[in-house]
Image (tube, rainbow, N blue to C red; front, side, top):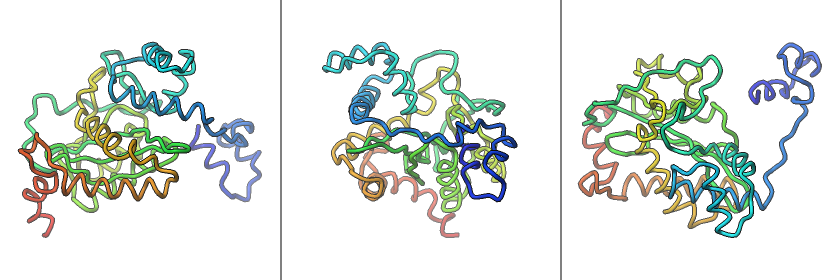
Length: 281
């Protein structure tokens, strides 16, 4: 619905009423402007985000209970609404991890039993909620599975598909194509616009299995690092400040932050040790 609404709002010689008819969109939807989140909701969303990082298996009932213990008398319905707005979901076995768009193709999970032993063998991506002092944004990143290197990232104020495609195309343009690209089953990643980019580059598409949040665990760990080592410490005021700050953090993360899983090496050291000759070519 949001993509259709965006097309209705664009300048066009046809009257907006006629454009709504052609797109099967109610006029009330075309003129609707969502109200910004209140200050109270922003505080609750920050707390929910912190709880989700520490206790990702907590659903709305347990999150509500934790918030009440922290002095926030909220209802479960409000917690559910805010978690949907943030794009958060409890990470536990169930029928679906996230909802693909209507009619979107879901691809099989290709990493089970696979030994990932080199850079550009597998890339992965995901979206996370980023709180600011006033308001919030969404962050998407493309990660090389073997080296943990962040290859590209983008910020957006909506959970649309466009900023995910921008991040993907930048990574492909700068580093070539991986053998396999893994995502969850979210509507942004199951869309034809997103999967079409991968197919045109000859990339095998892998999607997390139902109830298999651990299938994309390296990106989940990245989000924890980004938030506890940068976002929560800075309380960025504006999207411009957030973008500049994340740029500095990802430079640090790639070039200077050593990982125990990489034998105390940095993602840059591991990635470019294996790819520098071919990237130079």
